[in-house]
Length: 106
Image 1 (cartoon, rainbow, N blue to C red):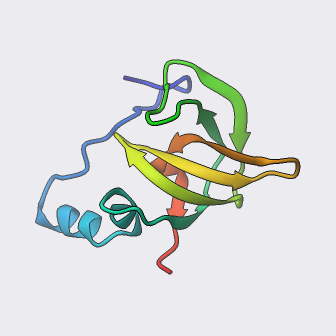
Image 2 (tube, rainbow, N blue to C red; image 1 turned 60 degrees about the horizontal axis):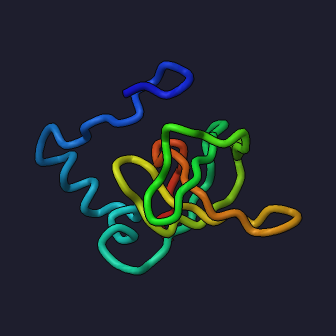
């Protein structure tokens, strides 16, 4: 499956033991494996997707975040992260591709 820019929407990341260890020790794994959240920074223009408990990738919104925007990641499913973003007018909670986020270690 490809996104609107022709990039793959999912890349199987587990090719060897090292890649599994990196994922298990990542901040994102803590989000997926518990009710914790993790802070992150958007690293490139990232379109937002709707959906409550699961993302709706077939219908991306026209909204997007830009490099440097700070988000809180609340959940993750199949390469998409549910984020909260403090916009100027009101908070936004939507889905974005996880590979568009640099996760904080703190």
